[in-house]
Image 1: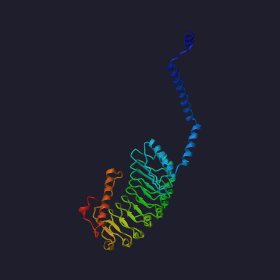
Image 2: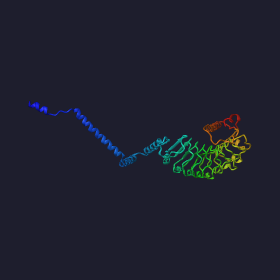
Image 3: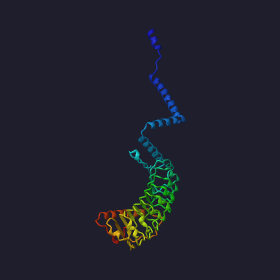
Image 4: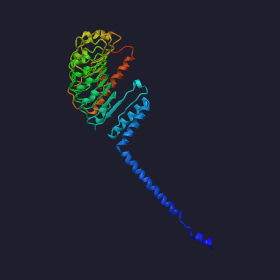
Length: 364
Protein backbone atom coordinates (compact mmCIF):
# COMPACT_ATOMS: atom_id res chain seq x y z
CA UNK A 1 0.00 0.00 0.00
CA UNK A 2 2.81 2.36 0.80
CA UNK A 3 4.40 1.83 -2.62
CA UNK A 4 1.16 2.56 -4.41
CA UNK A 5 0.74 5.76 -2.42
CA UNK A 6 4.21 7.04 -3.51
CA UNK A 7 3.55 6.31 -7.20
CA UNK A 8 0.24 8.08 -7.09
CA UNK A 9 1.86 11.23 -5.60
CA UNK A 10 4.28 11.74 -8.62
CA UNK A 11 2.91 14.50 -11.00
CA UNK A 12 2.46 13.37 -14.64
CA UNK A 13 2.61 15.80 -17.70
CA UNK A 14 1.83 15.39 -21.40
CA UNK A 15 5.12 15.65 -23.40
CA UNK A 16 3.33 17.42 -26.26
CA UNK A 17 2.47 20.31 -23.96
CA UNK A 18 6.11 20.74 -22.96
CA UNK A 19 7.20 20.72 -26.62
CA UNK A 20 4.66 23.38 -27.65
CA UNK A 21 5.78 25.64 -24.78
CA UNK A 22 9.43 25.31 -25.81
CA UNK A 23 8.75 25.93 -29.51
CA UNK A 24 6.75 29.03 -28.64
CA UNK A 25 9.65 30.44 -26.65
CA UNK A 26 12.09 29.69 -29.48
CA UNK A 27 9.82 31.41 -32.00
CA UNK A 28 9.53 34.55 -29.86
CA UNK A 29 13.31 34.60 -29.39
CA UNK A 30 13.93 34.42 -33.14
CA UNK A 31 11.42 37.20 -33.78
CA UNK A 32 13.19 39.42 -31.25
CA UNK A 33 16.51 38.65 -32.93
CA UNK A 34 15.12 39.51 -36.38
CA UNK A 35 13.71 42.85 -35.20
CA UNK A 36 16.98 43.72 -33.53
CA UNK A 37 18.93 42.89 -36.68
CA UNK A 38 16.60 45.04 -38.78
CA UNK A 39 17.11 47.91 -36.36
CA UNK A 40 20.89 47.55 -36.58
CA UNK A 41 20.81 47.36 -40.39
CA UNK A 42 18.89 50.63 -40.56
CA UNK A 43 21.21 52.44 -38.17
CA UNK A 44 23.88 54.87 -39.41
CA UNK A 45 26.56 52.90 -37.59
CA UNK A 46 25.77 49.86 -39.70
CA UNK A 47 26.07 51.84 -42.93
CA UNK A 48 29.46 53.17 -41.87
CA UNK A 49 30.57 49.66 -41.02
CA UNK A 50 29.42 48.42 -44.43
CA UNK A 51 31.40 51.17 -46.15
CA UNK A 52 34.55 50.21 -44.27
CA UNK A 53 34.01 46.56 -45.02
CA UNK A 54 33.57 47.46 -48.71
CA UNK A 55 36.80 49.48 -48.70
CA UNK A 56 38.72 46.70 -46.99
CA UNK A 57 37.42 44.20 -49.55
CA UNK A 58 38.39 46.49 -52.45
CA UNK A 59 41.91 46.90 -51.13
CA UNK A 60 42.31 43.14 -51.35
CA UNK A 61 40.99 43.02 -54.93
CA UNK A 62 43.14 43.13 -58.04
CA UNK A 63 42.93 46.02 -60.53
CA UNK A 64 40.94 43.95 -63.03
CA UNK A 65 38.43 42.95 -60.37
CA UNK A 66 37.95 46.56 -59.22
CA UNK A 67 37.43 47.67 -62.84
CA UNK A 68 34.84 44.96 -63.45
CA UNK A 69 33.02 45.89 -60.25
CA UNK A 70 32.95 49.56 -61.23
CA UNK A 71 31.52 48.69 -64.64
CA UNK A 72 28.86 46.54 -63.00
CA UNK A 73 27.81 49.31 -60.62
CA UNK A 74 27.57 51.87 -63.43
CA UNK A 75 25.63 49.43 -65.58
CA UNK A 76 23.17 48.80 -62.72
CA UNK A 77 22.56 52.53 -62.27
CA UNK A 78 21.69 52.95 -65.93
CA UNK A 79 19.54 49.81 -65.95
CA UNK A 80 17.27 51.41 -63.37
CA UNK A 81 16.75 54.29 -65.82
CA UNK A 82 15.76 51.92 -68.60
CA UNK A 83 19.04 52.09 -70.53
CA UNK A 84 21.90 49.64 -70.63
CA UNK A 85 25.08 51.26 -71.96
CA UNK A 86 27.61 48.93 -73.50
CA UNK A 87 30.93 48.95 -71.68
CA UNK A 88 33.81 46.96 -73.11
CA UNK A 89 36.90 46.17 -71.09
CA UNK A 90 39.94 44.65 -72.74
CA UNK A 91 42.18 42.18 -70.95
CA UNK A 92 45.16 44.49 -71.38
CA UNK A 93 45.15 47.15 -68.65
CA UNK A 94 47.26 49.47 -70.76
CA UNK A 95 44.75 49.39 -73.61
CA UNK A 96 41.47 49.22 -71.68
CA UNK A 97 38.65 51.39 -72.93
CA UNK A 98 35.09 52.16 -71.94
CA UNK A 99 32.35 52.71 -74.49
CA UNK A 100 29.00 54.40 -73.97
CA UNK A 101 26.19 53.70 -76.47
CA UNK A 102 22.80 55.38 -76.74
CA UNK A 103 20.15 55.28 -79.47
CA UNK A 104 16.40 55.68 -79.86
CA UNK A 105 13.92 58.45 -80.66
CA UNK A 106 12.73 58.61 -77.05
CA UNK A 107 15.97 60.26 -75.91
CA UNK A 108 15.79 64.07 -75.96
CA UNK A 109 18.71 64.58 -73.62
CA UNK A 110 21.55 62.54 -72.19
CA UNK A 111 21.11 60.67 -68.87
CA UNK A 112 22.16 62.78 -65.90
CA UNK A 113 24.38 60.04 -64.49
CA UNK A 114 26.57 60.22 -67.60
CA UNK A 115 28.38 63.27 -66.21
CA UNK A 116 29.92 61.09 -63.48
CA UNK A 117 31.37 58.54 -65.93
CA UNK A 118 34.34 60.70 -66.84
CA UNK A 119 36.55 57.67 -67.38
CA UNK A 120 34.78 56.88 -70.68
CA UNK A 121 36.87 56.87 -73.83
CA UNK A 122 34.16 56.54 -76.47
CA UNK A 123 30.65 57.94 -76.98
CA UNK A 124 28.37 56.39 -79.62
CA UNK A 125 25.06 58.29 -79.80
CA UNK A 126 22.83 58.04 -82.87
CA UNK A 127 19.21 58.32 -84.02
CA UNK A 128 18.05 60.34 -81.00
CA UNK A 129 16.19 63.64 -80.59
CA UNK A 130 19.10 65.25 -78.74
CA UNK A 131 19.71 68.82 -79.95
CA UNK A 132 22.65 69.84 -77.80
CA UNK A 133 25.61 68.20 -76.08
CA UNK A 134 26.18 69.12 -72.42
CA UNK A 135 28.92 71.50 -71.36
CA UNK A 136 30.32 68.95 -68.92
CA UNK A 137 31.77 67.07 -71.89
CA UNK A 138 35.00 68.96 -71.17
CA UNK A 139 35.47 66.75 -68.10
CA UNK A 140 35.90 63.65 -70.29
CA UNK A 141 39.60 64.25 -70.78
CA UNK A 142 40.22 60.62 -71.89
CA UNK A 143 37.60 60.71 -74.65
CA UNK A 144 39.11 59.46 -77.92
CA UNK A 145 36.02 58.82 -80.06
CA UNK A 146 32.91 61.01 -80.29
CA UNK A 147 30.49 59.30 -82.67
CA UNK A 148 27.23 61.30 -82.80
CA UNK A 149 25.61 60.90 -86.26
CA UNK A 150 21.90 61.04 -87.15
CA UNK A 151 20.70 63.12 -84.22
CA UNK A 152 19.10 66.59 -84.09
CA UNK A 153 22.20 68.51 -83.07
CA UNK A 154 22.11 72.17 -84.05
CA UNK A 155 25.50 73.04 -82.59
CA UNK A 156 28.59 71.61 -80.97
CA UNK A 157 29.63 73.03 -77.58
CA UNK A 158 32.75 75.20 -77.35
CA UNK A 159 33.90 72.93 -74.51
CA UNK A 160 34.69 70.28 -77.10
CA UNK A 161 38.02 72.05 -77.51
CA UNK A 162 39.04 70.74 -74.08
CA UNK A 163 39.15 67.16 -75.37
CA UNK A 164 42.89 67.03 -75.92
CA UNK A 165 42.88 63.26 -76.58
CA UNK A 166 40.04 63.26 -79.12
CA UNK A 167 41.03 61.36 -82.27
CA UNK A 168 37.71 60.77 -84.07
CA UNK A 169 34.65 62.99 -84.41
CA UNK A 170 31.64 61.99 -86.48
CA UNK A 171 28.82 64.56 -86.46
CA UNK A 172 27.26 63.58 -89.79
CA UNK A 173 23.53 63.79 -90.59
CA UNK A 174 22.72 66.47 -88.03
CA UNK A 175 21.60 70.09 -88.41
CA UNK A 176 24.87 71.89 -87.81
CA UNK A 177 25.20 75.26 -89.52
CA UNK A 178 28.62 76.07 -88.07
CA UNK A 179 31.59 74.46 -86.35
CA UNK A 180 33.06 76.00 -83.15
CA UNK A 181 36.50 77.54 -83.51
CA UNK A 182 37.54 75.68 -80.34
CA UNK A 183 37.57 72.42 -82.30
CA UNK A 184 40.94 73.57 -83.61
CA UNK A 185 42.34 72.98 -80.12
CA UNK A 186 41.84 69.23 -80.53
CA UNK A 187 45.33 68.86 -81.95
CA UNK A 188 45.27 65.04 -81.82
CA UNK A 189 42.19 64.77 -84.05
CA UNK A 190 42.82 62.33 -86.91
CA UNK A 191 39.35 61.78 -88.38
CA UNK A 192 36.55 64.33 -88.87
CA UNK A 193 33.21 63.53 -90.53
CA UNK A 194 30.58 66.24 -91.11
CA UNK A 195 28.54 64.66 -93.90
CA UNK A 196 25.03 65.92 -94.73
CA UNK A 197 24.53 68.80 -92.35
CA UNK A 198 22.90 70.55 -95.33
CA UNK A 199 23.41 74.18 -94.28
CA UNK A 200 27.10 73.86 -93.45
CA UNK A 201 29.05 76.07 -95.89
CA UNK A 202 32.30 77.03 -94.18
CA UNK A 203 34.84 75.94 -91.60
CA UNK A 204 36.64 78.24 -89.14
CA UNK A 205 40.23 79.13 -89.95
CA UNK A 206 41.24 77.83 -86.49
CA UNK A 207 40.86 74.29 -87.83
CA UNK A 208 44.18 74.87 -89.58
CA UNK A 209 45.74 73.73 -86.30
CA UNK A 210 44.60 70.16 -86.93
CA UNK A 211 48.01 69.03 -88.18
CA UNK A 212 47.34 65.36 -87.46
CA UNK A 213 44.03 65.14 -89.35
CA UNK A 214 44.17 62.43 -92.02
CA UNK A 215 40.50 61.84 -92.89
CA UNK A 216 38.02 64.66 -93.66
CA UNK A 217 34.46 64.10 -94.95
CA UNK A 218 32.50 67.21 -95.99
CA UNK A 219 30.14 65.53 -98.46
CA UNK A 220 26.54 66.67 -98.98
CA UNK A 221 26.86 70.20 -97.62
CA UNK A 222 26.86 73.71 -99.13
CA UNK A 223 30.54 74.38 -99.67
CA UNK A 224 31.18 76.63 -102.65
CA UNK A 225 34.93 76.11 -102.40
CA UNK A 226 37.39 74.12 -100.36
CA UNK A 227 37.97 76.06 -97.11
CA UNK A 228 41.34 77.69 -96.51
CA UNK A 229 41.69 75.80 -93.25
CA UNK A 230 41.52 72.50 -95.16
CA UNK A 231 44.41 73.53 -97.43
CA UNK A 232 46.55 73.98 -94.30
CA UNK A 233 45.88 70.49 -92.95
CA UNK A 234 49.27 69.25 -94.02
CA UNK A 235 48.76 65.62 -92.99
CA UNK A 236 45.42 65.15 -94.81
CA UNK A 237 45.29 61.91 -96.81
CA UNK A 238 41.57 61.38 -97.51
CA UNK A 239 39.19 64.19 -98.57
CA UNK A 240 35.53 63.93 -99.62
CA UNK A 241 33.78 67.11 -100.81
CA UNK A 242 31.32 65.39 -103.15
CA UNK A 243 27.72 66.58 -103.50
CA UNK A 244 28.46 70.20 -102.66
CA UNK A 245 28.37 73.40 -104.74
CA UNK A 246 32.01 73.53 -105.85
CA UNK A 247 32.62 75.49 -109.07
CA UNK A 248 36.40 75.37 -108.97
CA UNK A 249 39.33 74.17 -106.93
CA UNK A 250 41.94 76.43 -105.33
CA UNK A 251 45.02 77.00 -107.49
CA UNK A 252 47.15 75.99 -104.53
CA UNK A 253 45.41 72.65 -104.02
CA UNK A 254 48.88 71.08 -104.12
CA UNK A 255 49.45 72.38 -100.57
CA UNK A 256 47.91 69.05 -99.56
CA UNK A 257 51.23 67.29 -99.99
CA UNK A 258 50.13 63.98 -98.45
CA UNK A 259 46.70 63.67 -100.06
CA UNK A 260 46.05 60.21 -101.48
CA UNK A 261 42.28 60.11 -102.16
CA UNK A 262 39.93 62.93 -103.19
CA UNK A 263 36.22 62.69 -104.08
CA UNK A 264 34.85 65.65 -106.06
CA UNK A 265 31.90 64.11 -107.92
CA UNK A 266 28.44 65.68 -108.05
CA UNK A 267 29.65 69.27 -108.02
CA UNK A 268 29.74 71.91 -110.77
CA UNK A 269 33.42 71.74 -111.66
CA UNK A 270 34.33 72.69 -115.23
CA UNK A 271 38.08 72.31 -114.89
CA UNK A 272 40.82 71.04 -112.59
CA UNK A 273 43.83 73.30 -111.97
CA UNK A 274 47.27 72.20 -113.15
CA UNK A 275 48.37 72.12 -109.51
CA UNK A 276 46.29 68.97 -109.05
CA UNK A 277 48.94 67.01 -110.93
CA UNK A 278 51.60 68.28 -108.52
CA UNK A 279 50.22 66.19 -105.67
CA UNK A 280 52.70 63.36 -106.01
CA UNK A 281 51.03 61.25 -103.30
CA UNK A 282 47.66 61.21 -105.11
CA UNK A 283 46.41 57.67 -105.78
CA UNK A 284 42.72 58.20 -106.52
CA UNK A 285 40.66 61.10 -107.89
CA UNK A 286 36.91 60.87 -108.56
CA UNK A 287 35.16 63.70 -110.44
CA UNK A 288 31.95 64.34 -112.37
CA UNK A 289 32.61 64.27 -116.10
CA UNK A 290 29.38 65.86 -117.37
CA UNK A 291 30.67 69.45 -117.31
CA UNK A 292 34.40 68.88 -116.83
CA UNK A 293 36.23 70.15 -119.92
CA UNK A 294 39.79 70.81 -118.76
CA UNK A 295 42.11 68.78 -116.57
CA UNK A 296 45.83 67.95 -116.47
CA UNK A 297 46.65 65.22 -118.96
CA UNK A 298 49.09 63.66 -116.51
CA UNK A 299 46.13 62.51 -114.42
CA UNK A 300 45.14 60.05 -117.14
CA UNK A 301 48.68 59.20 -118.23
CA UNK A 302 50.04 58.42 -114.80
CA UNK A 303 49.51 54.68 -114.09
CA UNK A 304 49.83 55.32 -110.35
CA UNK A 305 46.69 57.48 -110.27
CA UNK A 306 43.17 56.05 -110.48
CA UNK A 307 41.38 58.90 -112.28
CA UNK A 308 37.63 58.27 -112.47
CA UNK A 309 35.20 60.51 -114.39
CA UNK A 310 31.57 59.79 -113.55
CA UNK A 311 28.94 60.90 -116.05
CA UNK A 312 26.31 61.01 -113.37
CA UNK A 313 24.01 63.96 -114.12
CA UNK A 314 24.57 66.44 -111.24
CA UNK A 315 21.93 66.36 -108.55
CA UNK A 316 19.64 69.28 -107.84
CA UNK A 317 20.86 71.75 -105.24
CA UNK A 318 17.39 71.92 -103.68
CA UNK A 319 17.58 69.43 -100.86
CA UNK A 320 14.99 69.14 -98.14
CA UNK A 321 16.30 69.98 -94.69
CA UNK A 322 14.38 67.15 -93.07
CA UNK A 323 15.67 63.96 -94.65
CA UNK A 324 13.90 60.79 -93.67
CA UNK A 325 15.59 57.50 -92.90
CA UNK A 326 14.93 56.20 -96.39
CA UNK A 327 16.94 59.03 -97.94
CA UNK A 328 19.78 58.40 -95.52
CA UNK A 329 19.80 54.72 -96.31
CA UNK A 330 19.91 55.51 -100.03
CA UNK A 331 22.88 57.82 -99.49
CA UNK A 332 24.71 55.14 -97.55
CA UNK A 333 23.91 52.68 -100.31
CA UNK A 334 25.42 55.08 -102.87
CA UNK A 335 28.58 55.37 -100.84
CA UNK A 336 28.86 51.60 -100.46
CA UNK A 337 28.32 51.20 -104.20
CA UNK A 338 31.07 53.71 -104.91
CA UNK A 339 33.48 51.86 -102.65
CA UNK A 340 32.66 48.54 -104.31
CA UNK A 341 33.04 50.06 -107.76
CA UNK A 342 36.44 51.49 -106.90
CA UNK A 343 37.62 48.18 -105.49
CA UNK A 344 36.76 46.49 -108.81
CA UNK A 345 38.76 49.13 -110.68
CA UNK A 346 41.78 48.46 -108.49
CA UNK A 347 41.77 44.86 -109.70
CA UNK A 348 42.01 45.88 -113.36
CA UNK A 349 45.31 46.29 -115.17
CA UNK A 350 44.32 49.74 -116.46
CA UNK A 351 41.79 52.12 -114.98
CA UNK A 352 39.20 53.65 -117.35
CA UNK A 353 39.17 57.45 -117.67
CA UNK A 354 35.39 57.54 -117.88
CA UNK A 355 32.26 55.56 -117.13
CA UNK A 356 29.06 55.29 -119.09
CA UNK A 357 25.78 56.93 -118.23
CA UNK A 358 24.03 53.61 -118.65
CA UNK A 359 25.87 51.95 -115.79
CA UNK A 360 25.96 54.71 -113.22
CA UNK A 361 23.32 57.35 -113.88
CA UNK A 362 20.56 55.51 -112.00
CA UNK A 363 22.71 54.42 -109.13
CA UNK A 364 24.52 57.66 -108.43
